Every structure is written in structure tokens, then in C-alpha cells.
Length: 270
Image (cartoon, rainbow, N blue to C red; front, side, top):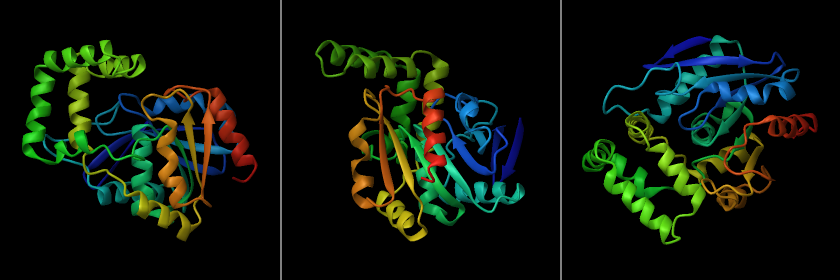
């Protein structure tokens, strides 16, 4: 594993495969780039995956307190990385939180990219109630209170679950993400540190059309975190350049079957 540094950001990167098509790959919340090893057997001959540990995850360092990653800083980082590897253009793969990163890059630097595979991506639907809070000092203080004293929030989650207003999968997802001080600390770092990474879908769609960038949305039929309907707006904005693939999965879809699907789409020239 290597580390790459540019513009105040440092990220660890793993590489899978040795094929001629290069992809920058971004994992989900609380995970690492190692997750993309599940796709490698199907893609190894056609692709080289550059799978990053996002800031605050895995072998990548966290951010200084109060600091947020800027979209242009993120674009500059990956532009410098591709230049360091003598890669003129690459594809994108983003899962969950990593999908939001990929959408941000399509908005900021579309000329760097040839295509994108977005797996249950965050960023397709605005989340103003919690992302908006992160933009304000009071909101960040409230997050800190939750991190240090989660009992009230957990009691509210249990009540909503008992009343049928929070389904079982989402309840377990939220409880898992806030079960320990370490998990809550990571959630706080990501909420605040990634608060400026909020792609504007209209700009993303315009760039896709102007630069002829096909985007494949891989959505889980039973996903309660990123629901299948979340892809509707991007599809409406750029119908020629978006393909939606509904998978028989929940939110977790980084597996061999997904790798086989992506390999078949690449082979078909999609």
C-alpha cells in the first residue's frame, strides 16, 4: 500500500488488477479500499483499480478539528494523482459515501473521467436535515453532544422502530453506526469533514452530456439506506448517459456478482 499527498490531503491507496482501463475507486462509510478486492477477480485482466482509503478511514489520516475537505481540493488531489501515474483519464467507481465523492469529481473535473459505476451512491438525494446542520457552529455543537451523550438519540430510534416508523434494516444500520464511542467519533468526523462535498446533480448531468461520460447506477432492490428511487432525478436530467441497474441486494453490494456485472458492461463497451 502507498500513500499519496497533495494540497493538504493524504490518502492511502491499494491497487487491484493490471488491466489497461484505470479506475479510481472509493469505499463506503467506515470501510476501506480493501473492499474492492471483491470485484478484482472479474476485473483484473481489463482494469486496474486504484482503491483509496478516504480521509478518516483505514490507513489515511483524519482531518484537523473543524477542517472540511473542499471540492476543489479533492479534484486537485486526484488530478495530481493521475498525473503522477501518467494516466491521462480514468473511470470512477464509488460505493455509498464513495459515490458522493465520485459525483463531486464529475461536477468539478469531468475532463479527467471516461465513465462511472456508482454503487448505491450517496449524493443523489439532498440530505438537508443533517448535512445542513454541519455547516453551522451550532449544528456541529449538537453533533458533538450526540457523540458524547447518545442515549437520547438511541431512545428515539428505538421508539420510532417500535412504532413502525423506522424499518428494521435502517434501525440496525443507524444503531451499528453509533454503537461505540469510536463509531460515533468517525461519524462526527465524516459529517463535519465531508460537509462541503455536496454535488449539484444539474451540474453533474450537464458535464456528463458535454463530455460524453456514461454513468451506471447500480442500486439494490432491497436497499433501505440508498433506495432504488434515488436514481430517478439523475436519470431524468441525463437520460442518454445514465443507465440504472437494479440488483437483488440490500445496501451491501461489493461482491463477486457485482464485479461480474461491471465486467460484462465494460466488455459490451458501456
